[in-house]
Amino acid sequence: MNLARTWLACLFVALLAGCAADPPSKTDNICTVFEQNPKWYDWARASQKKWGTPIPIQIAFVRQESAFKSKAKPAREWFLFIPLGRPSSAKGYAQAQDPVWKEYKKERGGLFKSRTDMKDALDFIGWYNHRSNRRLGIAKTNARHLYYAYHEGHGGYKRGSYRNKPQLQRVSSRVANTAQQYTAQLKKCEKRFRCRHWWQFWPFCRKGKD
Image (cartoon, rainbow, N blue to C red; front, side, top):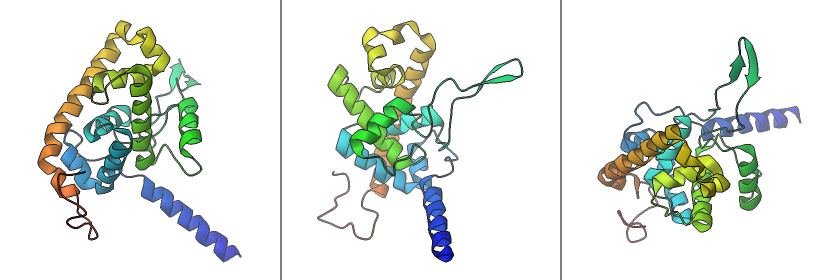
């Protein structure tokens, strides 16, 4: 019995370790990002096919939100030498906060979902942007305004809160520029990641086709 428990504990730890990965050494090139973590391409593509947010926008969001660090959290706030805690409950690759993460898990079935798992983070980004499209009418290719809604929430976006936040405007522009850069880069290397598995063969998998 003890042996079985030990084995299950080891398996659980191994699974958790497999969900997270070291940040890519070079994050300004999406091809390099996927070369170091090919499964990220598979998961981003799956999210794109389900929710409609292009792969480059998903990865640009992750780069901005967490710098590809699985356990990223907002920096602690301090008063002199006294820690005051963190400014929000944001956590993980997508920096999803507790309330909206609970909504996501409730809708998607979240027993084993984790904000430190890139697969779940990319699905969350796609899910949230899909809601932004349905509720706010933001095109799923409009990285700048998708990020405004992602950062401010749907209520804040409707109120136009981002218009009075120059820093957020600069960050959103950076996300849009990164997404544009990633889009151009992915066109040159995507064929290396599509159909790379042994079970993927023509005509069931054609490079350049969904």
